[in-house]
Length: 255
Ligand code: ADP
Ligand code: MG
Image (cartoon, rainbow, N blue to C red):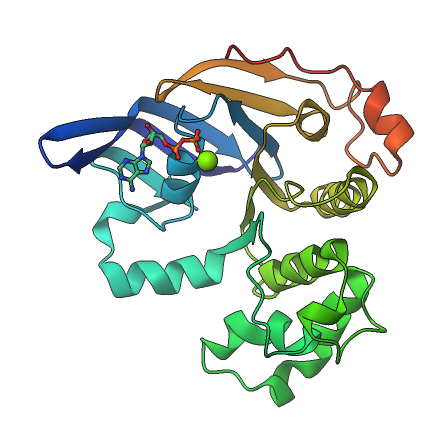
């Protein structure tokens, strides 16, 4: 069976207007991403990575161009439809975790379902299973402040998974973590990808991008070039740092 296309972007532009000045954050990006991919987006600061991720995540609309997510034309949806669609189809992981400090681990994982009107009591087992999946089954009643950074990011990943999303979008997910803890979070993402989840991640780090089979390098609002790695040369389930570093390192993006 041919790989299923999960994202199709055609000639996408995003222009911000600041007073009299137009900032062209994206200037004609076209992109197809298949289900089950692990894609890293790299590039210098200001090259348009976050803008692209925000459009991909339906957090922002393009100025022009087409965006099909899961076969659906995002432009045809009004804001309410789009936010409902986003809730069902996407999971987000941010550099700063974005957990709710007053809530426990299990309550934080439940948040996206809460917004869909589902009580924790009804989906408790599902949320516990996700806490276990990310290795926090013994920390259900802890609050974010009582967890390490790596543990907080793992809660955020469990939360991103709670809707069984089509894809996971991560903006610098290891940016606030020490390197060992970062590796644990990357191992978890590897495991999710090996289980079939599509992952798109923005990163500055070559060692982070080395986990991805496809690296998209942005420059001045366009895709400058791409690096493709074969499954055979970059094991999808790089369970240890040793296997990850044995994968060929991507070329350093132009700065
Ligand atoms: P990156 O994530 O690669 O650092 P961004 O996507 O954040 O780059 O930004 C791309 C360009 O768009 C930059 O020049 C930035 O200053 C500009 N930009 C991003 N967001 C906004 C905004 N909300 N308003 C105006 N300009 C913006
Ligand atoms: Mg950015």
